[in-house]
Image (cartoon, rainbow, N blue to C red; front, side):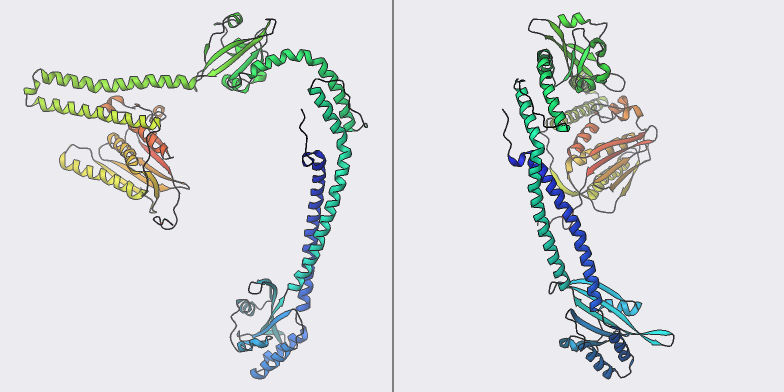
Length: 619
């Protein structure tokens, strides 16, 4: 059933509206140019009208050159009082010293004899050049034209500056006339646009009548009625289109029967479009491949068209087309290579007509790469945890058995055995705590206790703790490793919202690793700087470095570059994984640059928004 269109939704109105808008835009462009030109000419004429005559200028020059200042000022006042112009609001005469010698405003005679404070007049006296501008006085909300003209006295072959004339005239009359013309033009444009719109509606009706007839015919075709014919009004493009619609109704009727089988095939394909879908003919050759299947198999649909589905899925030799037709079990297709991993599950179903005739196959591809990866990581995780717990448990068992067999009586051996058992116990506790932290992060139950902190001071505080540890080690053990912490901080205070405890844990992890793998006497460089929207922390050591092949896995859980040395130093392989999770919870990033044999640099990037004003001002 056709939905009835409102007038404003019809093509009649749209054609008329476009015509009217074009007409209106044209008027606006022409009007803008016309008004601008009119304004320019009127202002130019106005300036010529308000400029003082050469006679007045010469009179003012003569009086400014006189030595009798009192008499000269009186003459200047008389000259200014004789100026007859309704638009001139003020004329002021100033000598070369900047002293006001006359003013046309009878109520403002008190300023005569005072120094002018007008910077424009001073500039004209200094440059000896005329100056003019249009300005707007907010005190009375009126536009004004200001002109300052230097006055020169001719003496011999030279001109000597004797002063300047300041003239101020109201532009209100000019703008009033321009406003009136603009209103007249806009009114005329609107009237012309309305008439144009009405004319365009009449013309569009004549154009769209054949289109309306064709719409009605296509609606009948959609309902299965092919008997009607569209009336052809002429031989133009619309007439040719009407004839084509008539031909279409005949062709559609002839193709209806053959399209039913194709419709069932397309319906079967479309029902599985959530995954990769491949449809074949009865010989197993590909006829349809959707975009997902093309991406999964890394093959262009045009290239795959006509090829056997056995070759496209690379299963020829393991299966035949009859196997796929008779047994529609799931098939696992491994497309992994050195660069990426991809595993697909392929499900096959038959395309059958009502008579039972099999006209093709539909293959649905489901990408299970992520699921396989998760299962593999789960197995590896259980294996790693079992191995990591078994090692300290085996060690503890050995020492405890030795103690139970009588070693506890040996005053030299027993304390060492007990110390080893305590160390292994603490190692397991650290591992369990790390696993619990990762579990809370994975489940989303770990929450950040954010607070606004001065990152410079916090970073410095953490490093001071390691300096203190170094001093303690120097006092307690001669063979303790020596190292130096070098700070390179920006002087600007950086205030960042972070979870202080978790952030300290991250820096502790990286610093502990830097100390573990740095040579004796090495330098650990800690930097803090600010970029556009981030703060960057870095910790550089001079240790063994990380092999290039291991850099991409350094933040994986239980990953160790040197497994034997890491376990000997008490590492669990979870510290950097926890650090990565914590930084990402803050919306930041953590990464490492390393050259084997030259050391490593760990970077932490945190989002940073500069705070303005008082940080503690809640208002």
